[in-house]
Length: 511
Image (cartoon, rainbow, N blue to C red):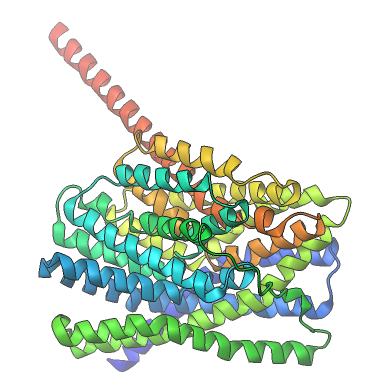
């Protein structure tokens, strides 16, 4: 048996590496061609980017393979066990605690916190964690009692925009960005599995659509909590350190920079996975009682997930982020600065394919819908959304257009569409908005915007930040539009079928 298992594992890893390379290669090719033909950058910086790209490819492959066996399995087992207990206080309490633990260690959030100069890192991370914990507990209650998602979204976003009207403008973009970065590669597999576990227990006709929407609600929590924080907290100390200040003048310095970064991300990922591991161990001894093979499979999956995330985040934060900031600054300082808008759109089209959490969402959409909603249609709508969102974000970075001019009508349109499409499309759309804004968006696209904004003389806090928020918003519109088109086609096909049946009846009566 062991050789067979090893052979299967090898085949799975090769398949994952192939998928990962196909996803990341367009980004690598686009950026490399720009650097070789148009935008001059130093050789060590380009080498750092290529090393980072290789680490991202391997890291994505290991993450996607490990998360299926570990994070998804743990989340599904715990949520199913909680639902069977029928103890409302236990469901709410555990959901809140897990939401806080997982979010506090989310790597995307740590990247954003290090980039925000006017809020203490720990204060921002804890505020966001409490917001996610509260809304994860609320999401579980919604699923148990079958509350319509659109009504909760309307109420919550109504409160969000009411607070946004009075909040300091420097806090608005950061607040909306925090809602996007919290649903990254650590939290999404876990949160989606929570929904799937409750769905399997309920097994009613609305369970399928209700199994989605957890990411949607959990994305609101950070926005709301950071907006509330803005009315009470003032801290201007600790400017964000620019990655561009690192000395990479030689290959030796470059190598040491990577070697120094790997232990840092190993420690971060240890913190990220520890709450999930501890929760699993507690539930295993108290109520799960899984057999030894299942436990070993989950633990091995966690180890593979750990290795994949360390490689992925090291490649993104060391290789990609610095080059993104440099590219944005160089092009924005040239006479062709507005070429950054179509370039950002092109990068957005490719970046979405390389986000680890998107793969998890696509897989669950196909499983829950029984193949009725294909991963390809979801991916296409996401690619269009992120391309358009990046173009708008770069336009803001260069011109300083207020974030609310885009966010307010965008969310209003998304909420209106929720009344015209099936519930499952609304839930998938709002979940897609959360998962689309992952590590590459936070560490590469946002840095590209910051570099361009600084070179153009704009306000980094109000103009560059907000890119993640727009990336999180646009899928709400495009995915629901896909659902609306599918609904209209279904109605048209039904009418044509009814028309044909009527003609057949008339012919039979006439004969």
